[in-house]
Image (cartoon, rainbow, N blue to C red):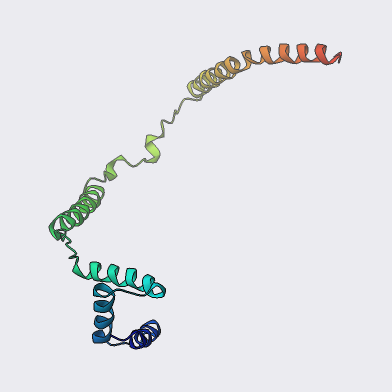
Length: 149
């Protein structure tokens, strides 16, 4: 093939105006002929495209049954949870006014209140006992910084 014709085909190829037969002509030229130095880059490009055309893409299609299995398992789990909430919702456990543990005797109610407050006081005093260390820490810090209380 003439070099001028090849260069014109290359210009058209770069513009995207060549047909498939013209591209095949270019590919054949660059794969079979001795190429001038200024067109060597095209030879590499057409060699690559010829090699890529020969390769077959083999892709194993993943079966959809596994994907469907996950979908149906998710739907079944949602249904089990929804049915469990609906059917096993025990409304007999709801609190009534009679279930509040009311005491009708005022003296007994006062005694129970004192016991409860005493228990809360004990818990509060347990937490307060650790504050002694904090006071000692503050005294030591003040001595170091030379601040007298």
